[in-house]
Image (tube, rainbow, N blue to C red; front, side, top):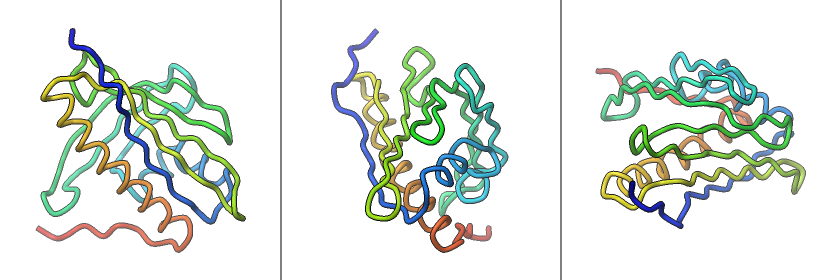
Length: 153
């Protein structure tokens, strides 16, 4: 097994919404499916299954399914899960921390546990972009009701 990278992904965003509203969105299938995924499934409790699905996402029409497990569900403070973007032998942990600030909430997304391999570094770069996109889309959705409109093939 390769050593794990010390570096981690960190994305922070201010969202003009309550911690409870954000938590309920990021811990439910209906919440994620409203702005970021297609047919996501989640059991929002430690040990619960989470299945991420995207179909024809973005300009490259990205289609993928990724399975993981919920590791923390502390409403309205923290939601976390593990999945395997760099291979089954290397689970990464994604944590969503919610802190009240400035009349809204600061959302901090972290992901860590990537292997120090070419595949691990590549997956980390891809996920860093993806979590930044997710945070932005979540903000636009909760603050303005704006949802992503995919291109037509």
